[in-house]
Image (tube, rainbow, N blue to C red):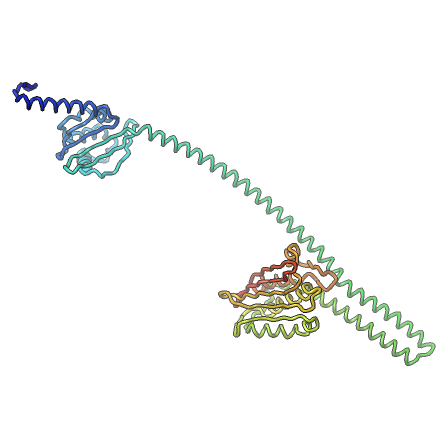
Length: 433
């Protein structure tokens, strides 16, 4: 059998070589039609195989992709065609870097933007026998689709940000409008409180003063009548009756005037300010005992009971007078409001510590109150006992003393038939001014 080189080969060997060559040509032709470009370099970095698609991807140097071509020559051709993109390196530096990278591929897929605007996926791997397999895939269509998606996403994001900004502006405007409305409501509530103040003062003070005036007028009339009686003759019985009536009238005048003084003092207490506080050190147990002793006559007369629990030796440094007034006002509030139709009410204070704070939990087992009343319990001059001993200032004073003078917080809880609960938390050591 004769091959193209004119050498006579044994028939069987020639047939085998012919078959192998035909197989190689078929394989080469098939690989030329693949979409990706494929190249194989031997351990000496010489080209062993390259399909047609690989040459088409690099038209400026594709003619060099011939079997046996050293990669170094191909790298130099790359530099000459692309020197404008790698001008920071000399030709030798560029070729050395390309050879080193090609001989030891990272094994990581890379995406590369070609000079003609096409995108290539680069995949290089080193085989166990030292060959380098190169794989190139045109991913321009995919990258364009990704860029389009990014553009759409960017546009959607900008649109969303614009909507968010617009909505934020609307919410800010709504918030400003709400604040303005709130300020108006606060002003309206202040005016309403002022109205209740005027009504409360007028009614509360007018009652004892009116009673005193009525009794004084009655005394004046009785004195005139007594003087007239004396001119016609005065008996011992008439004198004793006159003195008795005069003493009764004087007691009534005094009691009503004292009630007026108490009301005025209540109104003065409502103006307690932080700057008026007086700090002192004391044991809480002693202070609670003092309050119990002071209130004992009132509690005993009304058959109600006040108890407390406190840790022995618990030391405080705060305004003792303010704390005493808070507890006294809470008890008086229960006595006035909580125990209507209840003959023996129970009031209790539990004292406990929470970190550096004192927690006072005041409870009574009285009638409780509706939510609408509870919501106004700290409003100045709000009372459900107008004209019946309530000035509407007791709990208002409590709130101011706790939050301002004592520097703490206060919360209340109640429901009809469930009694009343007030939780107060204040620093055991008050901050200095």
